[in-house]
Amino acid sequence: MLASDNAPALDIVDETFLAVPPSTVAAAFAAPRSWSRYWPDLVLEVYTDRGDAGLRWTVRGALVGTMEVWLEPVLDGTLLHYFLRATPASPARLRPRELRREFDRRARAAKAIALELKQLLEDGREPGVPPRAPAAR
Image (cartoon, rainbow, N blue to C red):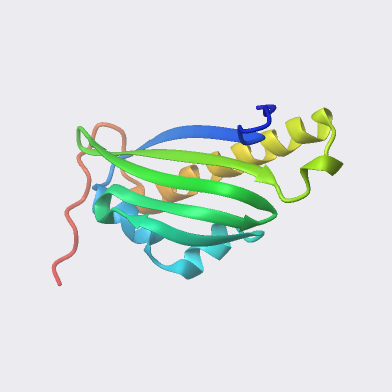
């Protein structure tokens, strides 16, 4: 969590299983307007769009660094991997205690996003029941 001179001050990793295909999860992150909803104090710029495998962004704003959403197909769903490697824009002003609070806040926010998507995208799916087939277009 605390950084050396070259390492980011915040290195957050999270994983959440969603019982939907990777393409369904990818669609939730596809529109840039969703990014400002999930991360309102960050300015994101895609540097790698991997389609159904996720996105990688450079991060500016309150933090400076990189962020990634990697969507790994697993069993009947997707393992949503989240990585944030960044430093507060004004790190000199943060004491170690404040940096720990920022780490905790960002880690909790990442999990909240994943759990919100899980609830929304699984659409009431009962445990042990296969995912619903996508609607025909």
